Length: 292
Image 1 (cartoon, rainbow, N blue to C red):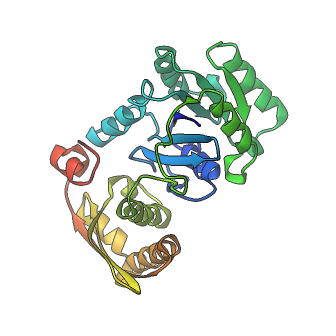
Image 2 (image 1 turned 180 degrees about the vertical axis):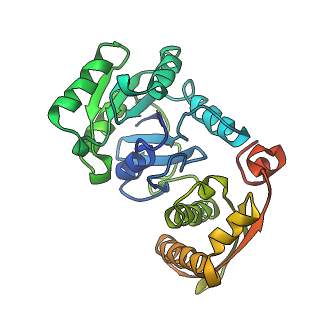
């Protein structure tokens, strides 16, 4: 048995969680087109007869604007020295922005083997892909460079094979039928937050946290009570919507997905509360699971 850990890093919104879900063949990490969708490190477990790789999906690395942003960036960069291989995902030319250059400088400081994945190749023409490939190849720090369209599963098997090259003889860390170590309560809270991101089109979602207050598993139904926290009274009104329609829509779509995840009927109750400036509060960040 060969085993080990693989970190997935990159700027916000380059497709890290989409790649993780594609590798595992099922959804364990929420995905939206909004930056900073992933806030915690999420572990996905890929197991075959003779191989187990634990993929660590990290928050997008960015310049922090508050304590939550600092936590997210620290969570991502903290994986560099703790894994056996790093997958660095990009979706644009290196010359187009400073974000990837900042991450590259951090990567150069670690001896961990690095694989570059150029994602969203389905949205590029061959010349654009070739330009990105050559820019990164010239740096000489990557053991492999691959192109993928993770949302469609294109070349995902090649990414798995590339990471497996760096796994050594080791134990099976998790049971073979386990795909994530994140508890169901955490995944449920993330699904609710994903639906908020999808239903709201402005900056409100970045100031939203979800706390599961009650999670009761009965024989024929799971009862869940969730509180959605936002930072302003005006945001509360936007989340609830006229006559509560927005919140009902969020709850309905979340409940349907949670039922599919748990394989049981779900009774989901949601409330919205205001906790001003929680993203800069150490106590709030700790309560919401963003800080040790």
